[in-house]
Image (cartoon, helix red, strand yellow):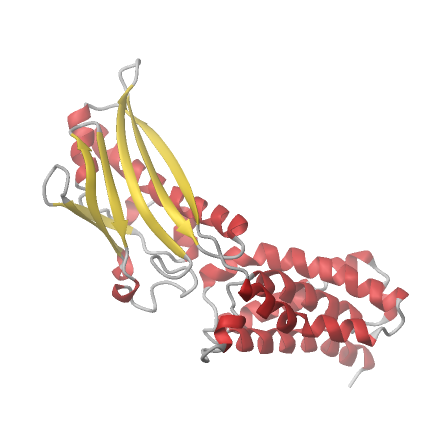
Length: 321
């Protein structure tokens, strides 16, 4: 085998194998073990790709490791291979990878710069690289001791509609079946999330029960807690993970699961001076991770995409005729 090809296989292959072994270790469902090592952790999300990047450059030739561009971009190769393999083997879902890929690529580049430093200035510093490889297993238990503090976020959206209040409100309280061609949820579609189908309400008033039905078996069970006809409707939201087929959503992003839950929603209809009506829709959702600062940003983006999708359907139907 050509020496260059062999060195490339080593530099790329070992980090990929390492990443798969860490993923398997952190995904093991063993009693007490998964209390210390979890995929949904800062350790896995940030430390793993950093180590992949460091290993990739450290295992490369010293000549290649001198190049800043090599240190920054070459670590992306094992990350993308790791992505492909975990998708192919069904270890991770597409939605999870889209959300964590920016972090993985950035952290891998940082790791690559560090790996280049070890390679060029520390001269075969095997102790440092060995400690780096063991880092997830040292930091994981420490992170598990830190109690996660659930954070609540608000996703706010609105749309202006040229239609009478009564007509708009009829399309708010009960949403008739939404054909595929009317679905404009671009982000949720890309992530493979269920799309909205219809919403049913048994009566108008406090205590009413509303079902927001999505594809793939996802149902939001909603109870009206505040109601003003043609003006305001507030409702609590429950999604039960046991009702959702395991093939619908990745376990790490399932609604109502350990990490992500939708709490409530509010519709408010406001009359504008220009004769239009502004329909407000906002919701509150909860994130429960050690990296809420990042997960919350994605959660807000997803919820806004869902809400804007529904608002544009209600606008179109209200303005027809």
